[in-house]
Structure formats: structure tokens, C-alpha cells
Length: 251
Image (cartoon, helix red, strand yellow):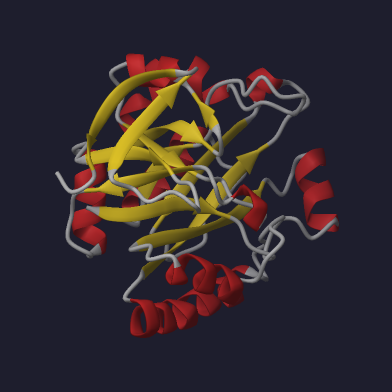
């Protein structure tokens, strides 16, 4: 089983840490695969223009350097930690209405994707690149913050385009995703290392991008809540205080 986290932000958008810092933090803790997925906000919307002004999003101009740094750091990560590092983005469609806001990941991306295109067209473009597509935090978090609810409200239409839906995000869990029958995954959505104790995913695959993606698409995975000071003798998934699955980590 590979210990993985496919939703991590760096200083290239609104994260607090550089990509090298993130590589070393995850690598020293024995992670097998991570994805750097900085925000790629719409260019035409008011909120997107604000994010660009504040330097909290990738842009057409910064995107090549972003990929180059991930490529360079991925080689170091492999040589030093035997850790696979994948380039990704979080397509970010923010709106003043929660019902019209949507975030989704493209993991394994190699080329620019227009964040202003429609949801289906954007997902189609990611699929054409062979990227893994993940619906990010698709349900309400119960926190006083902007919510991203559009994907879940349109899940019947969009389900064929997503490889997985986040059932765990940070420290939050979304029981409705688990009960829906849709393929799921769990990620940290890390912006700061204080958020490191959070949901991760164990993937039953070889340490190879294609095999990892296949395992996620075919649900050879187990969500796991990672705690720094806890040895992982077993896997415990907690949903609102109720254990619904427990299995040996090595099984």
C-alpha cells in the first residue's frame, strides 16, 4: 500500500510553503506519492482577477515555471526519498454564490488548461492529457467559509468525468460521498504544515503513475487519517465519531 496525498498547495498560489519544503516534509515522513495542486483561478471573473492581483493563483505566464520546478523537485524527491511527485492544478471557479462555486483537481497535468471554460470542457481537456480528475471538497464543511457546492449539485451530469470525489478533505468528512456509490478519495488540501494531520489515502498499487491512477479509478484505496505521533498498526476511518471501516494497514 502506498501512502499518498493528492491535494497540496505551495507558494505558487495560496500555500505557505515552497515546493522544496513540501517535498522534504512529506519525503522525511515516508510518503510514497504526492501531488502539488496549486490553484488555477478563472481569469475573467471578478474573484479570479482578485486572486491574480494578490498572487494567489497560477497564471498563463507563471505556469511553465511551475511545471519546471515540480519536474526538477520530482527528480530530487525520487533520488532522495523514493517518492513520486506529480504535477497538478486545482481549477478554481469561485462565485459569490456557493451553489455556483466549484473546485476540481487535475493530477498529472502537463499542459495549460483554460480555467474559464465550462466544467465539462475543462474536465474533457484534463482527460485528454491523461490526468486524474478529482472533485474537491464537494459538500459543505460546516465552517464559516466559502463553500463549493456546484459539483455535487450536478453530480449526475458530471459523474462520468470524475475519477474520484473527495470523501475526506483536511479534517472534514463527507458521509454523503461515501454513501453515494461514487468513487472516492481523501486528501489534506494542505496550505500550511499545521494542517498536515489530516486525511490521506492508501493506494494498492506499484509506485508508478499509471498504476496509481488505475488503482484510484478502480477503488483499490483506503482513506486514512494521518497523525504525526501515531504508529499506524491499523486503518481507522472515522465519520462523525463512528468507525465504519477498520483493516490492517498491510492488508
